[in-house]
Image (cartoon, rainbow, N blue to C red; front, side):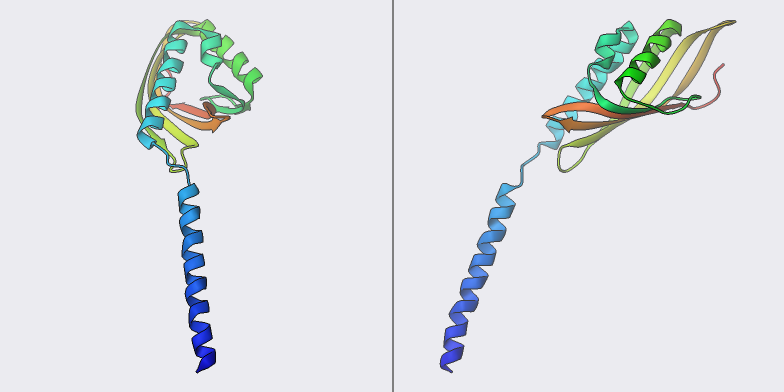
Length: 162
């Protein structure tokens, strides 16, 4: 009986210690304002769209991460800022107009990853006149050193260019 009386306080002490430890771990988790992060991504997405409309290469490149992966339609995937710069340099030469609309942005619970998706319409200068296209895009964003950067983008047409 004496042993049982010694064990009971020990069990209570262990339970108390364990519950305090759990409380500490919960308190350390950062609180993420998902809606605020979503608004930041929406703003960055809009800045990117406006830069494309102006054919502003530096502004277009400004929010891309060093190792960005890009999957454009009708060409191989490429990676990195140099390849993205080459792509936009050539794209802006034939771009007549572009419209892009963001449908939604989803932010991870941890607040360090997000993706935006939407639609696009382009008119490109073709060898025999304007070429029109419409499609969709998906952009993946990651918080790197406290700033959102585009780490991947993919866009494709809904039908062949006309």
